[in-house]
Length: 212
Image 1 (cartoon, rainbow, N blue to C red):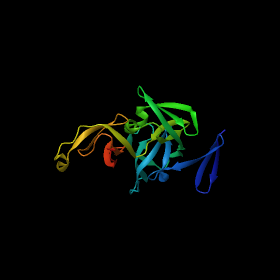
Image 2: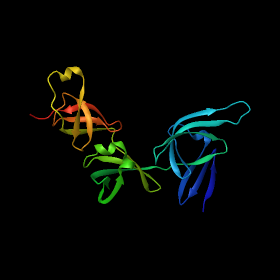
Image 3: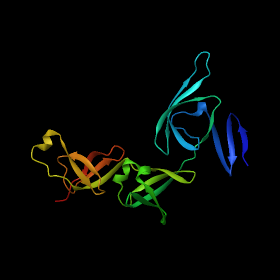
Image 4: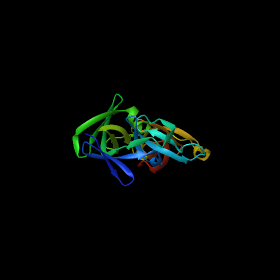
């Protein structure tokens, strides 16, 4: 049974023992999470427009939290939405096999599950064993894995730098311990530990030189 409660200026719904806040079109401010057509969205941009002889409208740019697709959408005063309930849980990366990435709950290593690279995205290639990440749950299903923006990884393969190359400011490919390949400065050598940006897939800095 779904029961509507009216409290002050807000609408709430009680369903299965959970209180859900109903959002009007004026509530869809930047950063707000809401459900539309059964899928969770995040508001990236919001602009309230009030034009003469026309009904006011909320012009937004929104991102689908499952597909990652971004779209522009206008909402009107007769529209309302459920607030998206996104639960975050800490999990640990274990290993990958044939495109499947295996994780476990931090406090329960036997509770394992796998995800495809399509859910994790670009950061998947920078995951190394025992890296702690955050899993985003919607309706008890994982819709996203939040990987730290910066990770430190050891260089396993890279061509040796040539004298004079460092002055030119160029770069060379380097294979990291996870198998990912990034471009690094010529002064980086095998055994060095470098910091990479997992969102852009780019080198940030060298954090540790290889021991002699």
